[in-house]
Amino acid sequence: MPSVNVDHLPKNILKLTITVPAEEIFPYIEEAAIRISEKSSIPGFRPGKAGYDIIKQRFGEMKILEEALEPIIRKTYTEAILSHRLETVGSPHIEVEKMVPGNDLVYTAEVPRMPNIIRLADYRKVKVSSSKTDVGDKEVDQTLEDLRRMQTREIRAEAGTAASGTDKVVLAVNMKKNRVPIEGGQSPNHTIYLSEDYYVPGMKEKISGMKEGERKSFTLAFPTDHVSKLLAGQDVDFEVTINEIYHLEAPVLDDHFAISLGQKDIISLKRAIRENLEKEKKQEEEQRHERELLEKIAIESRFEDVPDLLVNEEINKMIRELQHAIEEKGAGFEEYLKNIKKTLADLKIDFTPQAILRIKVALVLKAVADAENVEVDQKEIDDELDKLASRYESKETKAQIFSPTYREYAKTMLRNRKTIQLLTASA
Image (tube, rainbow, N blue to C red; front, side, top):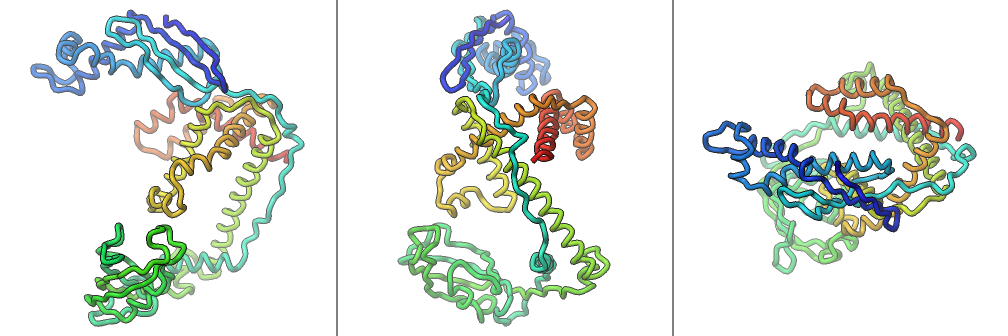
């Protein structure tokens, strides 16, 4: 059985030194050899059929041990945490101290310990205000206009037609400063909508009246607040060629338009829009209410030091969430950083206070759930997993959903949901 030594480091960090006896490693070595055999082409053997001795002779014992390392650590680390009843949170930082074929394996794992709440705020007395969720006519009209824009038809302009009005223009553009091409200033198919503002003032006026195939050179000043300090307020030379011109034909906001969107008439469409906006606003207000309530309880509570490892992990999670949201909108994360004039390091510093608050909120939720004896029965978990699994056809995805790890995650999620409902009812 592996031996485990636990050291308590500053800032709520636990350091586990785990020694795995050589005799307990061998079953993992055999499994690793099979995996190597399955992934390798070995003359005279079908994939997965070469024995351990053949794999050892061809790849060496260290290669097999390296392949076995991850499952050894995963199992022995989990057993160490459970057997010593350690309340850890986040991912461990693993360092291999000794790894020699035929010998004991020694590694260390540094992991944040779940910080304790020194004093939990009187959560039943914490109150937050609510905001109205009314929807105005302007919001309905704006949504209608957005729908109208989405249904707009693009009609290719006839040869010899000049760009004007609300046309969409596709052009090749080459930007230069002092006769030197600007990095990123070349595009073979750059789109401009003449009805919308363009980031370089005067650009629309220069290309209005041009025809397909026509070329033109001109100079314009970049905005003084442009993200690039080298270009902000500077004169830039443009060389443009009109590739395509499209007339934009927007539908009339009438009953026919409403019918095309599955509604009876324009009045029904407006009513449906208003109902959807009210529903969205209500959901947003509920989320804001919950977030403000939990953060207020966390701010009024007192905690042990939050480990830096845990804070860094939460920051990285927030970065990934932001990156995913930006990419979903079709934008690039690097371009986003340029636009807000920040580096990744700047962003991480900005996120630090919120990351600490998010960790404290999670601790508060657990503490309140414990104090109120909030429980989740097995049927609730089964129902939640069944509902989620019904959305997928993949057997692999379903297997992941019904795995013990995800089941535990679902239990925590449901318990948190019940706890939030209890808190919002009293607030």
